[in-house]
Amino acid sequence: MFRTNLVRAAILASAASICVSSANADPVDQELVIDGTLKIVTKTAAPEGHPFDEVLSGWLFRTEETRAMEADSFDNPGMLRVEEGEALWSTVEGTAGKSCASCHGDAAESMKDVGAAYPKWDEASKKPINIELQINKCRTEQMGAEAYEFDKGGQKPLTAYIKNQSLGTPVAIDLKTGEMQKWWEMGKETYYTRTGQLNLSCSNCHEDQMGKNIRADHLSQGQVNGFPTYRLKQADLVSLHNRFRGCIRDTRAEFPKAFSDELMALEVYVTWRGTGLSVETPAVRQ
Amino acid sequence: MNFGLKLAAIAAIVSSTSFANAETVAPDDVKLTDGVIAASLTGEEGDPEEGALIFASKKLGNCLACHANTAMKDQLFHGDVGPPLDGVGSRWEAEEIRAIIVDSKAVFGDQTVMPGFYSLKVGLNPRKDLVGKTILSAEQVEDVVAYLATLKE
Image 1 (cartoon, rainbow over the protein chains, first blue to last red):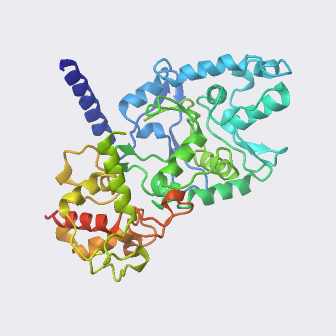
Image 2 (cartoon, helix red, strand yellow):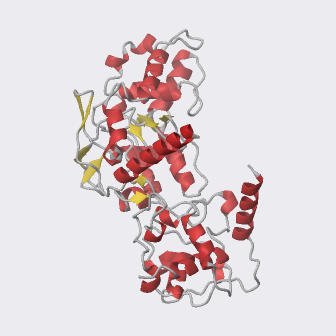
Image 3 (cartoon, rainbow over the protein chains, first blue to last red):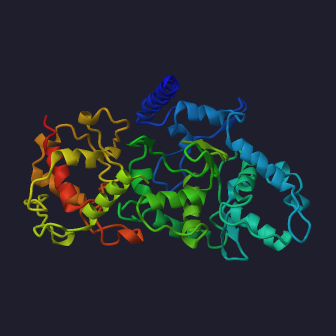
């Protein structure tokens, strides 16, 4: 009984602190420096044609505790998953007897800043390709291994490990290659389309109501520079397409398949909306 | 799922899908003119106590997600996407409140973020099991209207 009351008191205390921090209507004015050395761009001038003047990382919208967790790589629970990804990088799989490292060597060199430029145009499939699909392409075409199923196997940790090699690098995708501009347009269309019984679009919350609170949730710009992101709610890394689907599901709509054309286009468009923000993978969020 | 929860779930399904009362107006037949729905959707007055539950429930109205309400200050986390509803019953007539809940876009314009709680004008690809269904039943809308009318300045 005594113990139960203690637990209750602890829950109430933490709920109260969340309440206070999420009651802030504005993002915080604070710098993110990881491990006291790596400066992260969490606020920068928006690219031309952007609906906002400034793009803001979701980090600025989270509680003090959550922000502190990301600022210290030992406290960031997502880093354990990044370490799993590091082990996968040099794990031999498939009929060719190769690992990622067999071709790409040390990821710290070969993958440096690579994640900041994805998604990019893939000439072979005539579609944009993201890190997850690029990994699958290597696995099936070079390693003779099975493609990872969505969110399964090593997909999340390996993606996080590769993107983590761009930690701090500003997001900059190339819309001039291939038909990237067309996919950007398609993604924009999706971003502004209301879905589901609740009749909501991405823009309704992350553009029109940015900075406001939906119950305990402080609405950010919905930036994707930290994915795969460690979400405290799931106590795990969460992939971008999982989050896209979660948001669409919450409008009470049928949601598209991961890596479908619709969600790939959305990834292109939303990544562009975060141009100039540092890659934060693995970011820590609520 | 325990028995009580099961009962509650069944009750929720029944109340949101059936048009039990012969007087009940179907969503597409609601007459909303000049920001007003003059008559009760069920022909009867709502129950304010029931309305308070629907207002706070995340599964039903979830009104607190966007609107603060000092009368419910025991509940954590009131949203601020919409205006606070303190004193809403003094600022608006019940006929106006009804219209805003039923189809806010018909009152405030298409850009409004608030969903229509008794409207079939929904977004793309609604979940299959929700096609042709409204967020709240006519009875639930009337209960919320009755509750909001009690919030006086």
